[in-house]
Image 1 (cartoon, rainbow, N blue to C red):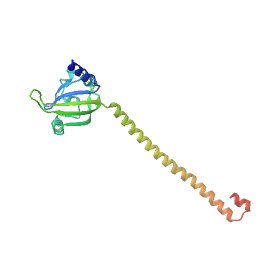
Image 2 (cartoon, one colour; image 1 turned 90 degrees about the vertical axis):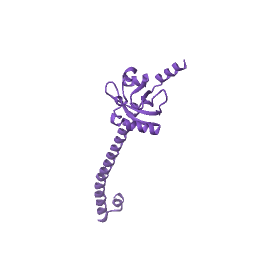
Image 3 (tube, rainbow, N blue to C red; image 1 turned 180 degrees about the horizontal axis):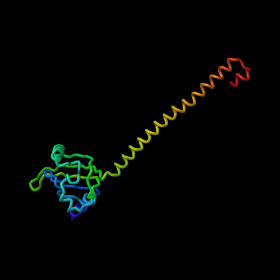
Image 4 (spheres, helix red, strand yellow; image 1 turned 180 degrees about the vertical axis):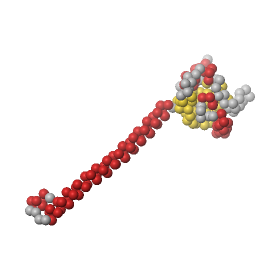
Length: 177
């Protein structure tokens, strides 16, 4: 009963869980959430290698990345997983290394979280920042132009008033000038 409860929890937790053969990179276990996230069945996913679903883990680089995970014990990174339809889903992955035991090979246990909304929000923030910077530049340009456009006639008016005042005017005209 406890094992059934644990299995239910692993399938229903809302994050993807992969157990990966550390030497070959083949998926040994995938929870239902991980399979559904990519549009596959669990059985289909068990036919895959990490490099089949993550384009950032090319076969030539797998050993280098696997060595880093073994050396550090666990690694957290952002990457992307390819769905059945070919779309890339941004995910945050935390991978733990489990050394080999008598009855089990060395494994990587990975926990994947879909970060699509976070990436969309980051993109929106970047676009808003760029729009604000562009608006600020436009405002500065507008104010500089308007300042110039207002200052030029004001200088002319003030100069004419000074000339008129110097040429002699009544006290009332001087006050108005």
